[in-house]
Image 1 (cartoon, rainbow, N blue to C red):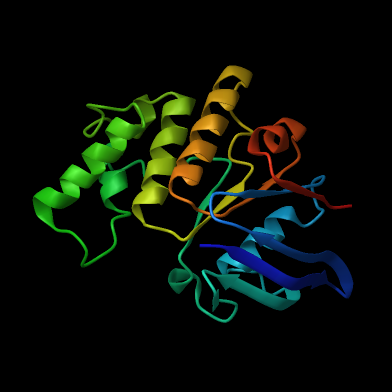
Image 2: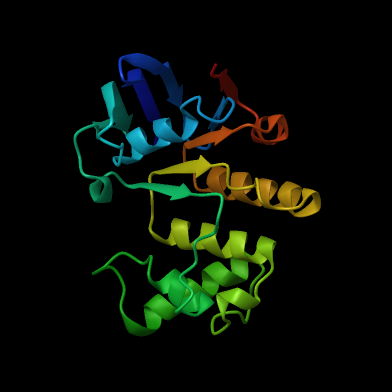
Length: 209
């Protein structure tokens, strides 16, 4: 799988914010850096299919060879991690993960086994029934990543998901996220203002502004 950004141009009120052509191979990371307001999150929104109508955009997004530029967001097979883990507070940790299992693929006991296995992989064995509010910041981040991966995406979009973690947790979660993406051969598009994120990711770096 690869993610190709072909002559992407995003504008606001006639001013061009983004002009980018890049290709991200399986398991590779493209890091887009820049200050607040430079258009980093706007680029992710365009790739994911929910760009605010206030912006105008052109160019082609290809995922696994398919042009997904005109597809609705729910059919693009991209998954995004945000600054906040955004676990549903009315669900247990395990129920949060079950929510991501694609409809019609697995039922009953098998779905539970998938969620349990994902928790085991994230070092969260026995956390299925836990209230998300009882988790540490790093545990929430790992649970959020496994929920995303259970949706079986073809590309991973990262919107500064490490920025609210303390220094020690940030390094560990970065390594965990990038290793999981590499093992699954997912192309990753990361936007950040932190040079340490780019160093940890390796690969190409594009600087806006």
